[in-house]
Image 1 (tube, rainbow, N blue to C red):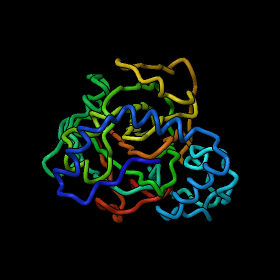
Image 2 (image 1 turned 60 degrees about the vertical axis):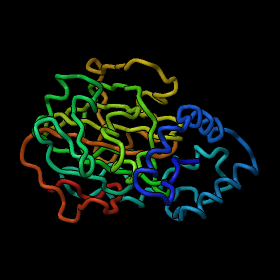
Image 3 (image 1 turned 135 degrees about the horizontal axis):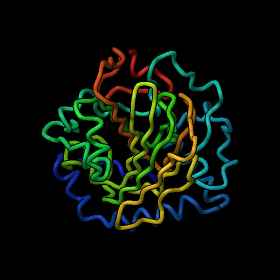
Length: 288
C-alpha cells in the first residue's frame, strides 16, 4: 500500500527493475484500494501495515485502527495537538522523515546523491524566472518513509503565490533509487508551491512516487488525479492565502518526498542535521 522497498539486490538491479514496472497502472490500482471502504478487510490491511512498519499509533489523534474507514484516512491521520511542538527557530522542518540531502545550490544545481545533480529549472517545471530566484540559494530534501506522518506543514510563515502541477514519472523515491536514477526528483510527478515570506521567496515541492495515489493541498484539495500530459498552474496573487509556521499545507495520499528551495543569503542549518538523519515536524531546521 506504499512505495515498494528496494529488493536485496545490487544497487543497479534494485533500480533497473523499476524501469520495467507499469508504474502508472500500479499507482492507479493502489489509489483505488487505498480509498475503498472495505470494512474488516481495510482494518486488517491497516493493522498489518502498522505491525510491518512499526507505526507509532500513540501519537495519533485517534489511535484505534478500527476507526479508519479507508487506508487513506489512516495514512493521512492527524496527530495529537501536543505530538509535534514547533521550535522557536526561523525555519522548522515541515515533515517527519529522513534527511536525503541539504545545503547550498551551486548556481542552479541541486545535489541529489553521489554522481547525480539536477537543476532548479527542471524541478519547478521549466519556469526560468522562478528557478532564477534560487540561484546560489539553499535546498533541503526530506524522504517520508511508510511509517512516517504524511501531512506537510509550513516551515515558516508564507503567503501563497502559485501552485504548479508538473506531470512526470513515478519512480520510487527511497534512498537506493535516489542514488541510482539521475534527476529523480525533477523527473517524477510533483506539485510545486511558491510562497513569499519575510526572508524572500521559497518553494515547497511535493514529489510523487510509485504507489503515491495523489497529493493534496489545503487550499485546493486533491491535485492529482487527474494525471495530465502538460503542466497545470494556479495563481493566487488576487487572494490572501497566508499560512503560519507549523500549519498544515498539504498531504501525501501514500508516501513520498519534499524538496525545499530558499534564496541566496545567510542560512545556517541546525547542527543536528546530517544526510540520513531522522527529523520530525516542527524541529529547528534553520537557526538564522
